[in-house]
Amino acid sequence: MKTTRQIYCQYLLSSQINYTCTNLADHVDNLDHNSVYRYLKNEKLTPRLVWEKARQTLEQTADGYIIFDDTVADKSHSHEIEGVRRQYSGNVGGVVKGIGIVTCVYYNASADRFWVIDYRIFDPDREWTAAEEQTGKTVKLKGFAGATRLKLFRVAVSTNRTEYLGTNEMTQSDVDAAQKESGHRWKIEQFHREAKQTTGLERCQCRLNRSQRNHIAAAMLVWLSVKELADKTKKTVYQLKQGLLSDYLIQQMRNPTIAFS
Image 1 (cartoon, rainbow, N blue to C red):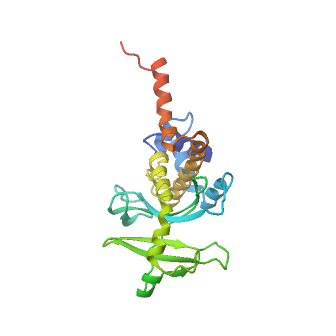
Image 2 (cartoon, rainbow, N blue to C red):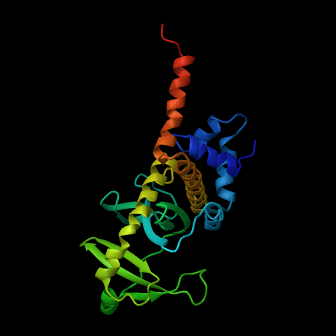
Image 3 (tube, one colour):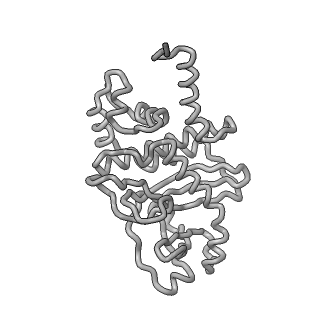
């Protein structure tokens, strides 16, 4: 059997703890673990797939927000995974080995719904002048229309932690005001937490950079599917994921695989 995007994404959605290629092969008839490795190595899942999936259900509104933030896929126990470097993780509260990911979330404030719509693997920081530290700098986003510009602010949260705030309000020239307006960004932090805890986003153990990128893309596609169902059923992503275990327990109580005697 050949590994497909459907099979791999379904695995990330269904598995609870183990997200390795070998574990997937062990739970699908006639699927060899080498097929899973080859899929992650040779496939090319791009960020555009995330947008194409999100746009099918995304509800735009006049008071919507486009929010950017970064997260770290923790690879603390890795030794030979490509793309891993030491960087600050807010989740851990210190420097860890991991893969940095910059994500973009659209937040519909009226409906209180949000979608991940894009992401990029993190690049090293650029230098900031003293003036830019206070008033922000104008930046252009790769892939956006030529005239599109954003104002970017660098905020020192502590002596060893820096955050970045971006806005299309080009008249904004005060870092404190920009920081206050950014209160809606907790939605993107919620996305980071849910994706890591329910899709295995940071659990891939493959060494190749392309394999890691494909896994990250698949995890985001899975989160979009689960989040859409969660919104429709008025449940949380966690309730849906844990419901799989509940269904398993119900089945085992009715017809146990191993009966107590």
